[in-house]
Image (cartoon, rainbow, N blue to C red; front, side, top):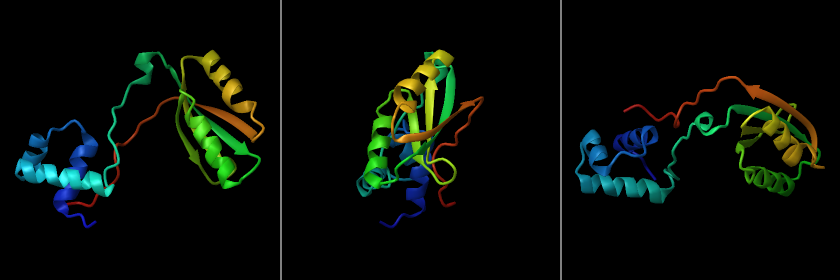
Amino acid sequence: MELDRTDFELLRLLQNDARLSNKQLAAAVGLAQSTCHERVRRLWSSGAITGSRINIDAGRLGFGIAALFMIGISRHEQPTIDALLDELLAVDEVQSAYLITGHYDLVVNVIARDMDHLRDLAYEHFTGRELIARFETSIVYEGRERPGIPLPAN
């Protein structure tokens, strides 16, 4: 699918605020509402847009600790790794999991209410697994995220 400047501008607007109405989007890019709606629908159907979400402040909901679990695994077969990633993402406190290069094989971002909760989380879902050979925890002091991806300039 070929994207033009208007498509990229729509993506830029939506990745910064997915709650924008079609009317607001159309006005921002200078299109008729029906044309804008069709363009956004095409971005969805092409897979350029795959979803939308809200960000929740975990600290305000009682999750005062964010941590990264660095994990070395003992077997590196793709089906085994896929199954492990699926199992880890099923744990409510797991925010994301990444297969990486380097000394460790996985980095898992987790949240916890407090240190006791973090310890219990590690023991119950991570350190007792046969597949996990190395395990290290780093507490996140502060984090910032940049929403979206870089898009071509207009």
